Length: 112
Image 1 (tube, rainbow, N blue to C red):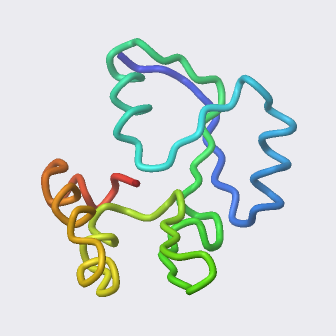
Image 2: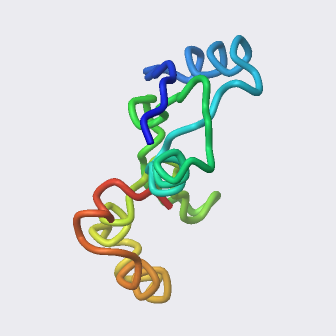
């Protein structure tokens, strides 16, 4: 089913916050797309504005520090998790779960 919506792709957190403040409830967030796009195609979601978070600075990062521990940001893909050496060495359950999610191609887009 073809639906019309406005597509926005902010590049900074400030732009993202501004878009969300301006669009309010009309905005639907797109991170990996495996929920929103499936629901749009099935006619279950009817977004007026789709806000793609994939281009926002630092949203796809994976970091580790003694103070914060493991930090997997909202835009990190499953394949990024699978490829991270720290996660592979110290979080085997996360790796095992990530391997069970979808195909390799889907894991390139799917976010945590």
